[in-house]
Length: 515
Ligand SMILES: NC(=O)C1=CN([C@@H]2O[C@H](COP(=O)(O)OP(=O)(O)OC[C@H]3O[C@@H](n4cnc5c(N)ncnc54)[C@H](O)[C@@H]3O)[C@@H](O)[C@H]2O)[C@H](O)CC1
Ligand SMILES: [K+]
Image (cartoon, rainbow, N blue to C red; front, side, top):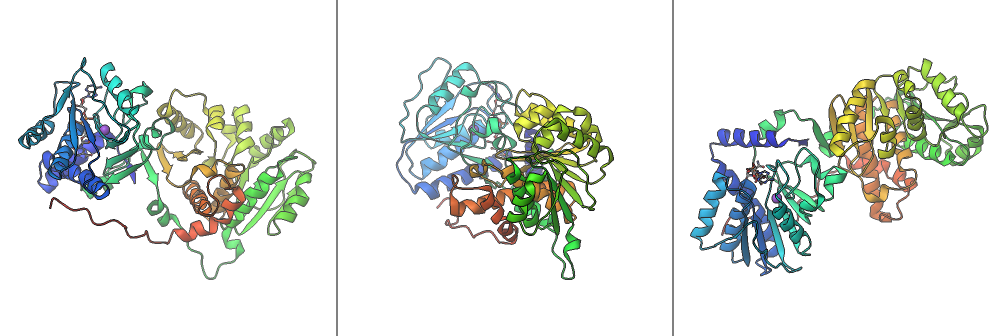
């Protein structure tokens, strides 16, 4: 699914209105009915106090239309208009009139007014700002937002938590609604996935308001979210008359004294993701542990006992995964430098491999095109320098990726793969995966996919998805805390199987229009 900019969403509205021959107020009504149905299915008429806070734009208009439906179904509502500007939108005004016709009189909140008391068991509907926010809220609106956040009430945000911008960082974290749940229209918003802004939406879901599918399909976007429907077409089925040579030979280079386990995990993940053959290249101290732990994996040892001192081998691998547990010894750096001079094989580089690239920036010019780098944020910082905020980070990552023609897979709650000015945001994975060796497994999976003939960019995107899905399947038996990388690797097979599972049918009753 794509991430659209606010401008593209407005264009989608316009396109839909023209094509479906409806008016903008009809689209707003659809949006409000969807939200009403969502609430009504869950609340079943419960008389919990619902405080609606509506701005003066179309987000506020959605809130007013929702208030009307709630009123008509006997809910216990109180409507507040957050009167932050006199430039009220047309559809806001139409819905204000429709509400007044039903004898609902909103409170108009002004700069110097008092705010209503809200109990912790009440519900707040946040319809103050939507995707149209373009400057910081006035201090009194920020104060109101703080009042709502500290009320302890459940906050349901319409479209986006008020105070979040669609395309830039927050200036004042105290002027953003902390939503318990967000009902967002038609498409996910990039800010739900970025670490600094994602924290304002505890949970979110998308409501279909019938925007034109053709427009959504044909419009190019800078970022997209990667789910099952995006990776399924990438999957390469196994051929009946194939043999292990068909699926490539991966070489995993890394390890140092005390960190042989990293290579073991990576090699195992590589094998499990389908690489035909896997060889580990490790210092001598790694020979016995890897041969013992992984009988399927071949081992080549370095001349040195405890750290890699020369990267030379007489096998012909398809792809190399490099850097896990490798350490930063100066002779290892020299070995990497020499290796990069002549290497033409596709590379996946992680951990100390990345730290060595950051330490010797000249190495970056020696990387084959479309080398995959898999940094976590600290490793990324060493490569691209510091950033002001998430948007700045994405900008710098794109510049870096372009400069060196590398694929950047930036690890996090929503791992993002950046290449060719485009970002692919992963949707699988869970906090249990913040555990030792998780990244080593990812390197192994991506390497294993390249071995089988996946293009590097596809291997990075698909590998990240499978890694997250394996983690998601594993926690069903372990919970977050007890998830180990070994257990994640044990679930890679089922992550492939899951690609072909149909989604479960919805459990809820069908939402209804008005009775
Ligand atoms: N296709 C859809 O997704 C639909 C979405 N709908 C809803 O419409 C809003 C977007 O509405 P818009 O009027 O463009 O913006 P806002 O409601 O966010 O209103 C902001 C309003 O105020 C001005 N403004 C911006 N920042 C400030 C500020 N700091 N202080 C004062 N005023 C400010 C700005 O110029 C706007 O005019 C979307 O989120 C959905 O909720 C439709 O209802 C259906 C289709
Ligand atoms: K909102």
